[in-house]
Image 1 (cartoon, rainbow, N blue to C red):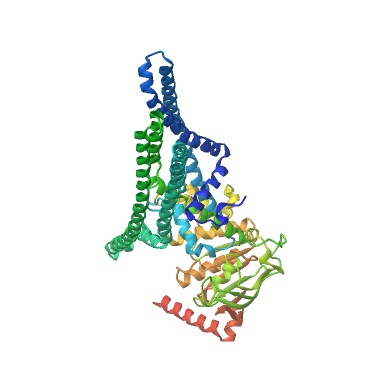
Image 2 (cartoon, rainbow, N blue to C red):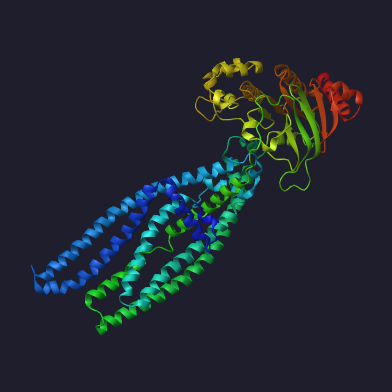
Length: 615
């Protein structure tokens, strides 16, 4: 079934509401059917009461004149009973309708968020997470700030307005019995007015939606002022006043922008209200003339008057109508995003042998440029990595070292050339399957506010209950004593923000992250990547860490990234990157004998380390 957003429609508001209605049966067909049935009843029962009340008003004089027990009186009692029954049943059905709508709306919001997160998580790479439109959708999904752009509100608005819409249509049909043209005018006027206002609300909401980047900036300033992480620098440097001033200024600019559009909306509202008042005046005048001329009976005139007044129960200008438009706004965008990200998925055409890489990993004339960048980061890269050996990739900042690792991990796809494993092009391999063969630790590794056990076991979540394997990953890092000293051992939450939790020093966190990488190796990863995880350490500490790790991972395919030439000399092979290409390649001894960039940088950094040691 094709979602509504795939079909061209004239009004974006209508497309958004239809998208909400299209998703509701996916939550529950029975409850969606109940929603539709109760919407019809909530509309029909008040209309029944309206007709019964009008006929009762017309029947009262005859019933009073004929006296109790007369056929006229019994007729009036029947009309009264029908009106009261319709009123009571209508309230009961309305309660069921609203409760069902509330639950459907809440589950729709969860469904939309789940589909958004699933869509965003589907691509093998990460380039789409740097796209501003997707970040705007993610902001809406997180419901930051005081947003009314929530699908849950759209369902509640639909539950309120749909019965009113049907009731107004029924009242228009009743008026057709008085005057066809008047009835048709009302039948056309209310939908036209409602659609005009929905488009206006949508335009205002879309304007706010398009300014999501500015809102993210404002919310970032707010979070800086409230979060513990930046609190030290903010107070030491006296930044709180500057932060609050910038937040207030950005918020005031946003409110001024919004207020300008609200004034435009008010002018539109004045126009449609003027048309509504004109139609009301014409209808009232014709009904009054018909009554005075005796063209319609008293009972019929009462029905027509009550039908006309019931028209004004239809919401088009209040918050409910606004919530319907604003709440539905992101739904077709999320459905379109699902389609877009699904279309970008690459087909799986190859499968790696269980032992791969058994021979080598090769970069063959690989080129890469980040989305939107003018210059490539890597261009014409040829590199062969022998299985079971340790390779150090060194180079100055911006040489392309981290980009090389991201390409190998499938986080980005090469813009030229190919990467092969034992001769198989990775472009045709399932990225998830390939990543089970990788373990990586990046410079900006994540400090999860989870237990020690979870922080380590995230390297292979399916083995999280294997405590012996977790301890085995900890031992080479020398952190067993540290973990035993924590309040709850492996089950201690690594965050002081939680009761019973604790935080670690930078070096301790680093060893936890390294244990996580080793845990993945124990689970079957065949390539271990260390992408400058020790960049925050001094040269001596980094060198000791790399030497220790190279000893631990002997026989494993290991790729070490560093901008410090003097820390990786024990690697089996060292390549120097510059401008995204290999400019030097060999062992430490070979490169020192060559007397090129590696030798120059190594000597410079070693001399600096020696001077630091003497001082």
